[in-house]
Length: 221
Image 1 (tube, one colour):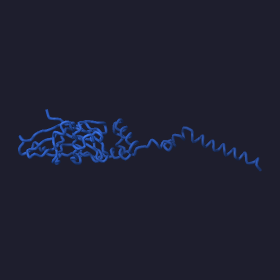
Image 2 (cartoon, rainbow, N blue to C red):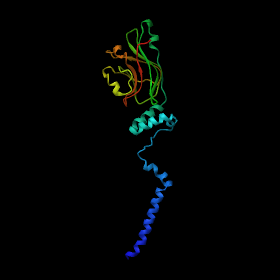
Image 3 (cartoon, rainbow, N blue to C red):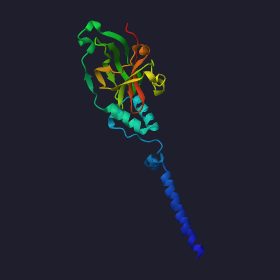
Image 4 (cartoon, rainbow, N blue to C red):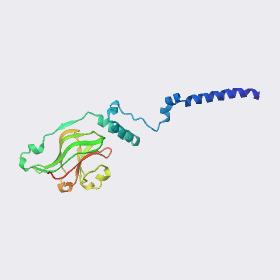
């Protein structure tokens, strides 16, 4: 009986080799390649994502490889409808305009195509002694839980740089909108303008501790 089993085995073996050959042929490899390339995760971004400039897409895709949740949150925030806030110019409508002082001012900068703002940041002292940070002509990329900070660091791009002078960091609260003109009253009673002569106004993702933009502050004129 042993002799008769051999032909059956060889047929099975040939059949198995044929299947393997078929699977490894280019036609089938294309079909199955998604399963072989699990490492290169495909980011689940919405269609609007692919309208971004190539460099912008690449930055988000790189981020996705490091932290998928952060990339998803960044893209979702960026694609949200922009909020335009137009608050009155407190220095201009001050009851005693001649007593208003412009203390420090600067312009926001682009750090990367996915961390960017334009517009100005100016700290005023109003006639009643209150200090206010006013953002004008703001146009900021949206991000997860953006806040407005004051820092004594001149050009912070990382949490580590902000932490060089943590004692002077003041969180003025959530960014009111991506666009427009906005006032942030500086409530901190210990606030001393001298600490910010080489400092900055910062737009910052509180959720991910990432700087979106900063405006280096200096005396006007």
